[in-house]
Image (tube, rainbow, N blue to C red; front, top):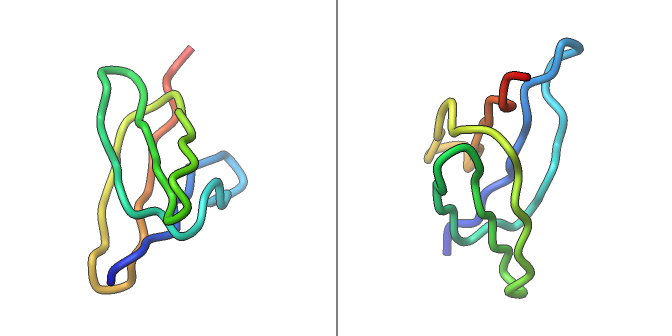
Length: 64
């Protein structure tokens, strides 16, 4: 089973926002993350990159 950790890009680097993510759905200017327990979290922004080897997802925050 492949589970990922999701990070958000910040001026200070990367910030971890969710672990053990099993599902990612892009919804316009937000991303819906679902973890292995079925808990959902919506994050404003878009997907910047997916690293399937290292199980990392990088999100770009929505610009103000």
